[in-house]
Every structure is written in C-alpha cells, then in structure tokens.
Image (cartoon, rainbow over all chains, first blue to last red; front, side):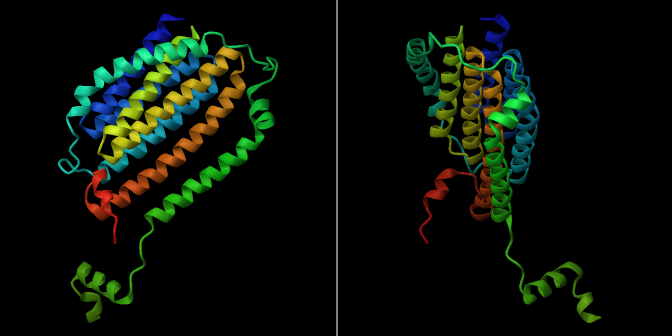
Length: 178
Length: 99
C-alpha cells in the first residue's frame, strides 16, 4: 500500500473525529469539507478521476455551502448543549471497534477475486450504456429533492387582513390614508 | 493492501455512527450521516479498484452522490422547519410531538 494513501486515510479519520467533536458547528462543517477534499484526492489516486471530481465539486462544495447557510440561519449557542460523556467514552469505543474491525476485515477481504470489467470500455460508455437506468433514478431523485425542499419551505399565504396589517406595519399606514 | 482500506472504511463508518447515536444537535446528526456516506463512497471505489472495474464503481458513486445531495437538502430544510417551530436544534425537543 502506498504511504501517501495511508497518510490520506489517517487524515480522513482525523478530520472525521474533528467534525464530530468540535463544538463550533461552522468549524465542524469546514472539517467535513476538508474531509471531502481529502477523499477526492484519495479517489483520484485510486484511478477514479470522475468520482473524485464529483466528490470535490458537489460534496466538498455544494453540501458545505448548504451546511454553512443552515448554520448561519439557525445560529444558536446554548440550546443544544452536547453531553460530555461521548467524548470521554469515544477513545475506548474506537479501540474496541478497531480491533473487531481489523479481525472482521481480514477474514472478509483478504482475497478479492478479479472482476470481469472490460478494460477497453470508456467511462461514458459505462455510465450511459451499462448503467443507463441509474440516470433515470438520478433524475427522479433530483426532482424528489427539489420538490421536497419546496414543500418543506413553503409558507402559508397571507389573508387580506394580515396583508393590511403588514402594510401598516411597514409604512405606518400611509398607503391606507391615500 | 485492500484490507487496510476496508479497515479505514469500517472506522469511518463507526465514527459516523457514534456521532448519530450520541449527538443531540440536528446538524451534528447530519454531519454523522455524511461521514457514513463518505465511508460508503470509499468502499465502492476501493472495491472497483481492487477488482479492476473502476468505471462501474465510479458510475455507482456518482449516482450515490446525487442521492446524498438530495437527502442532505431535504434534511436541512427539515432542520430549518424544526428550528422555526421549536427555536432550538435539540433533537430531544422532537420527542414531544403529541398534539
């Protein structure tokens, strides 16, 4: 295994722990963005440049922007205080899980058989030809997401009385005098 | 070695799961979910790399990323609604849903 890939994996785990345990939500979101950027580098090094570009632009870019916007909209310091015990228990839990993880992964993935991928095929032919039904699913999911957000963020229309009150509150009733 | 990658996949999944199980803040819960999603992405890519089927694994990962973005967008819209209604991001406030 490449040493640089091992360093990238260690940094990924480090940034993941930072994202979980940093108290400031903004710093946690930025740690998550760094994690995505590191993952993109790792994907590129594992011969997956298209997935790396998607990871970098969509996950490290778009999702971070979404997180930062929501954190800015819902800024609150005191109301959701985290318990202290998870930070103390975490190292022990990580060591125990790590030992189990090493044993299980060694028994499962030591011999991975070679696949039947066609080395002459291109990425475009695979995406648009072999996995063309996935594209339909992606379109459905995108529309589902868009309409889901629209449905969740829609506001109740104002009644005539509420509109009148809003106008009075806005310009002190000048419009009504006219 | 492929096993080393999978050990880190397991560790990342555990970190995300730990965050999901122990955090009270709704945004932190989503961050935990994102970490778990990243471990899944790494798992797909390592599988494709090890089997020599990079194109298929990349296609699956791109589909997965699109699904991930939709889920995060809808979940963040829900978080904003919860914040509007309860004035807090504490998940425990959602336990009182009786009318």
